[in-house]
Length: 331
Image 1 (spheres, rainbow, N blue to C red):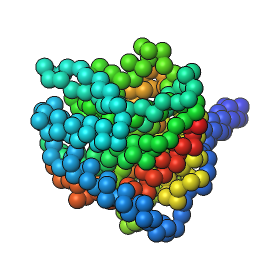
Image 2 (image 1 turned 30 degrees about the vertical axis):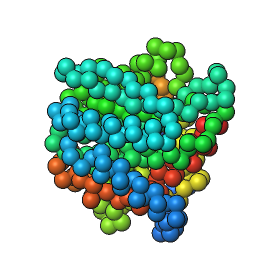
Image 3 (image 1 turned 180 degrees about the vertical axis):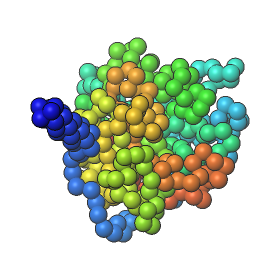
């Protein structure tokens, strides 16, 4: 009997140790998260907030997806006009779903080295069902468009920066071969292009300083902050090194609260609910930056997800933060 209890105790201790190591591996991230009041907005950030709002209103004031095809086309044309107006050559990836032509929209900043790998930064521009999708995902699209402006004159040395607006992220195309990001990741793979990392900007405009405004899938509520004032960086397994590089840079350069970690898609609801999932299917390191969507935003996937719900000032701070990240991690 004594031997049996010894074995049970040892086994329990091993399980606890294993759980602790797994938690450390998944949730220990570099850098120190910002705490306390945010600094005053700079003049550039105030101007950026106005620009971001214009994009969200132009793209996501009404439902826009294959079932609302005319509005989806208007959103695509706004994206293309904006990028062309900045002087980019726009590269559409056109394919057909339900007998309708849809497209991913890409621009790139070419490196000085021909052998460079790629960094993909993207967001989906379709909305869910009858939701206008201002936060999900007009905010992500607006951020990519403004990053295209902020980075226009920058030329990386060893990294090809691909800025991509994806179609068909939402159901019924989600996790099918008609998902825009799946098509795009497959195309890069077929070209033999090395993707050093992919960042999906997903639902980035809802924040609150109220206590207990943040929810989580269990068991994360036990260890994560309960105030919905942060941006979350979520990496799928296989993306730890890339996640750490992005988070370390963001925290080093941008005074904004942040959390992050690795989260297995099969175990943690929401961990793979964006375009980064597609890139992991083709073995590219991939992460999502998000306000956590339904875990704090009551208008998620609802007709009430309208442009007036978005916090454009904090979206501007995050967008400027990602400009710094790109310049830092893509030399």
